[in-house]
Length: 310
Length: 293
Image (cartoon, rainbow over all chains, first blue to last red; front, side):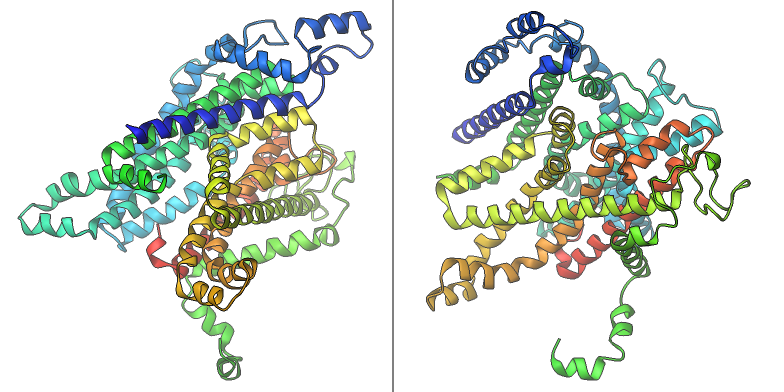
């Protein structure tokens, strides 16, 4: 209970730091009216917009009202098209979830079985082959992979569309682009985790009590090996989102990543701010949940953390 | 290596060094040696000035393809600039930035890791809190926003690159220092009356340098991908300067009639990350086989 409370408090502090950081970095970058309004506009109009957006207030007052608005779920209005920034972002969420979710499922479905096989047949040609492919897979920059896929499947073979998101065929190349490097990483983590577990005394015990090889792997090895993989999954969410920004740009996939690159291009402060805070919130929550699940699967973590934190 | 080894083995040392090393590792090391050479001498090696525009020689393909000339062995871009020269200078920019970013991040992280381990209590809490904060920030997205809003000076770009990944070094250093301090040699030196800074710099740092060096190698590919991804999106390195990512981003618009504009720089990035990953894996398995994954 105490351990859970500490975890949640830490997540809260991290979130406050993120929100503060975002505010100050985006505000010290200069007066938004300079960027958005034409140079030759008269001072009265400029002052009107500064008042409208609260930019005439002292910085700390702005910070306070920004914090209060955030707590109430108000992320501000897009400077560009006067729509609610939160609504603009939320409208794009399903597309990004579809892309990252598919990529994650592909990568787990490929990576984990290959990692298990590589560990079971350690040092065989299968193991070497899988690991060699894995090194290629995670060294491949996703923007380059995306372009190669477009060259081959859209321009040469003309079988898949290179941009947009209308049909299922549109999903294939972006999901593969995003998923392949994660599949390679999961294969490596699974292999090392399985190798570690297979050498544990309880595997010998299982064998000595007469459990067959299939039973030993599925009931004893895999559940134990999955613990570190759950932890890694939490850390990978940030990378997954960063990868989605690139992939969505390459394939003109209308998700959050593409919204971000266009909002950054047009200096739409509220939208950029909203995306950064929501992404950080997703990551902090994911990490906190991972920690809690981890502590729940493996009670030793809870005791250890409690001991070092008094 | 002892002095006797040096005398007896001098002639054969290179051969002996190569004997047990996998072929892929030798290939990766050789490729990285070439890249480092390019990083240093790109401006000397370039056959033309990398930004020299020659509209009469636009979009020449690289040599094996029909229509290519030996005047531009790697072809030319949409403004007739020589691709070989641009590739050399782009590699130089990307390599230098990745190296600078990796080293600055490592120095910052290692220093903070030492500080956290040495001061303990409040400092430890604050630094580890910052580590959590850094790990929770989608840093690539922060970089996008900061570069777009704060403008695109080289100083800001390098600072962002340095802040990318420092938390890994801090976490590793803190752990290593805490366990090294408990070992005999550190206690012995302290017992002799050495000051804390001396113990850390002269005795503990050399002892934990191995794992940190491996981490540096392992981090290098993601740092170079960080730079190339940002430049690919049109932030980061912008014209008139060039980098591999910027070349790839520019070449993306000409996939139909000049695919090599994107493929050649893309392949270079891929080979650099691949070589560094192979070297990192190999170093890790040499240093501590139990860490291998």
